[in-house]
Image 1 (cartoon, rainbow, N blue to C red):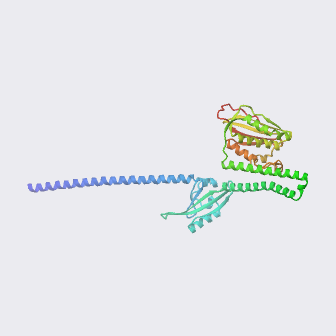
Image 2: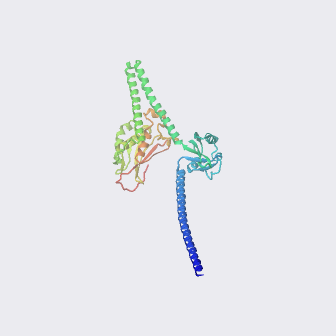
Length: 406
């Protein structure tokens, strides 16, 4: 019986030992599984975080694009649009879920999308839009096939070419204007040279008159070419400004003295009404060019036996405001906003007779802006013109602003 009891006890101990080992093994396996699960959870979390980060980057890129972007599904239903597209086409409210025709209403766009879907390759068309203002757009569409085969989308990207078209139009107008301005004096010079060659040179009176006319138009050509070169340097940024601290009253006085004889020919009084002691920061040569252009215009187009006054004073924000005022016939209201355009003339015939190139005020605008200022015109028909422009005060100036009496 003791032997049987011993066997039973031994068997029990063995069972207990096996059970303990089994339990220990189960605990180890459970701990290993827990560790593996934790690793899997960590990897899943990292993966989700990476996807969310990547998605946020793509969303930010999508929303910050200056081009309008439209994503359509295989039914030409809108899946996504970006803020740029909303701004271009003035789309308010929800667009996702609507059809292409519902939000843009252009059959040529729908034809482009269908063609891209059918051919499986990109394409593009040019569009003119009138709402909310005239725009020129290039629409490029490309197919996008989901690698998982869930969806087949079409992405349409809209490039706004309005500014490019406007610049191209400006360039064409500029070339046409330059060609016209050059053709007139060249034709006059050529005509009078041919007249002289045909025998007019034998008449001293005609010879002197024709040579004076040829010289006048040659001078006009020279002025025009010089102004064109100046504008070219300003546009390209190649013109370097030599900023110096200048006493504005003295600078104006020098220009007034230089133009006194020209003003005397029309019995016009030039008046320097600027207060002394105002120091500005400017390029002396370019400041002289600004003043000469404005004063010369006032002399040429002002009232005979009239007056031209230069005045001004200090204003806020570290600027000096100057004005050149005449008591001439003035400029019509519809022309006031255009006088700084290249080749724009209020009276074309009179401007050419006076030897103007049509570029002087455009140069003034560029030069003033290059100094960090702005220029504008106030005029009442029959009561003269007043050109205003601002320039920066010298750094050393720290004087309270004073009103400008114009």
